[in-house]
Image (cartoon, rainbow, N blue to C red):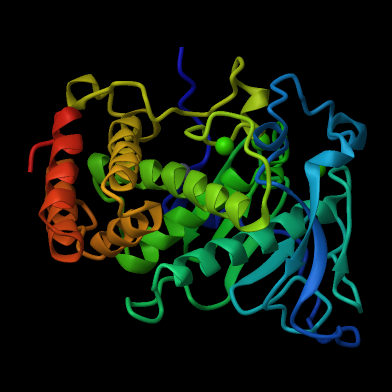
Length: 352
Ligand SMILES: [Ca+2]
Ligand SMILES: [Ca+2]
Ligand SMILES: [Ca+2]
Ligand SMILES: [Zn+2]
């Protein structure tokens, strides 16, 4: 049975009562760091994806559960020079562990240290924003989340993470594998924030909520694959697999929280956004492959998809959102691309 749980988006009111925790130290509490680019150790998306080892498991957050080869040294860009994980596109708050601080902007931790998840949060939100900007958002296209975005890492109950609009941030939990140890969890949540930034209140219908989950999964995988290409990291698990590492806590191998090849259509809807989202995400993934086949490439599709999302109503239907995507593809990428979009949505039972 498919797991459809976790990594949801809560209404602000439902979350308000949960938002507590110690005050975050002032960024000015210690002397500043040495500049805007630091260095850090992060997972190459996640240890299962980079190693292909489906037998890895959390082992109660033991450092020894994951080999040193799963970590990569990366530049940590756009820091504000305070020595904390704060910068132009991400600001990390943590309720677990001392906030990571380095006077030399050098952030090397292992997965057992709470600061590791803080580093992952900073790196991957910055990485996702840089990816959006590489697509043209903030230059040739309107900006999306191009301001410091709040990332909170904490112990909040169970195995779940959230994006909330008040306060506007993502919150990464620590059930099972710590959620922030898997870039695809972080970027999934950031994907919800992308939608909220584009269309405030997005997700006000079952279809819109399902589209939100689907886009989060798709965006997580796409940003991770782009990063693997950018940094030369191995991808040794199935590409179309969100959250390979986090999902070791609650799936059988191969570990994927959800899939893009379920074959589900609108006739199979069960009224649950994560499950039903697999109808939409399969179309997104197949269109991606089709854009490659047309010689347009994956980034062309990602730019078109995200550009189209500005035109989705907060309570859109699958059909209306597909129509908007079709029109955007037609205007930006031509008739063949638009026909591809129409065909892949039609295969899922979504008619425009
Ligand atoms: Ca950890
Ligand atoms: Ca988890
Ligand atoms: Ca993956
Ligand atoms: Zn979600």
